[in-house]
Length: 247
Image (cartoon, rainbow, N blue to C red; front, side):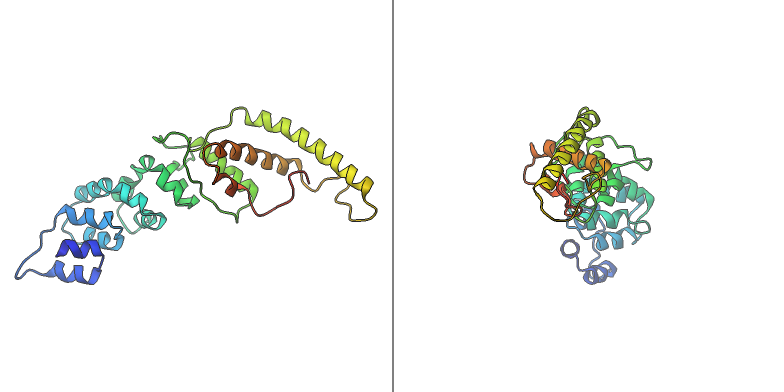
């Protein structure tokens, strides 16, 4: 009965059964911990962990045993375990120690802060990874500007979750020159045909080379991703700063 209550997540019933000693006292087995974690009942696990019935090594073993279920449970479940104050450092570190085995589930949360917390060391270095390149689904946040999107793509490449682009700086520099020259020629041609209208800039451009380079690199990364996940790569192009690639 206690097992079913734990799986169902009704904390009030669990507390009642937990205090019961007659006519039967329910066994406080590790299976209860595992069930709570497997079913995403984090508040139940917290109650069990604070009950005094389990020593720390048993709680750590439960976290490690059910790490896959926790990470597959989404951002809310992961963040609940990692939230300072909810659990001891031993339990938090136990879950973090399993993160590199569940990179795909972590990235699928789309929570960039959580992704960095789980997969990056405090100094920004990447933890050892176990997943081969190509992640199938990318975190998508259209509220961020292109510079931040590029930073995230570069971080994912360092994590080897997307394919790094060899010689990306050199290739992007060559593309920048072509893009800038084409933009200027198109602008001049448009002005020749334009009888009246707004002049977009003294030098014929409304985008800096720095921002143009950002767009170019995003394009290079997303083209690489598109080969593996064509339905996802377009989400990396921001809806902000939606100026054309040439202007």
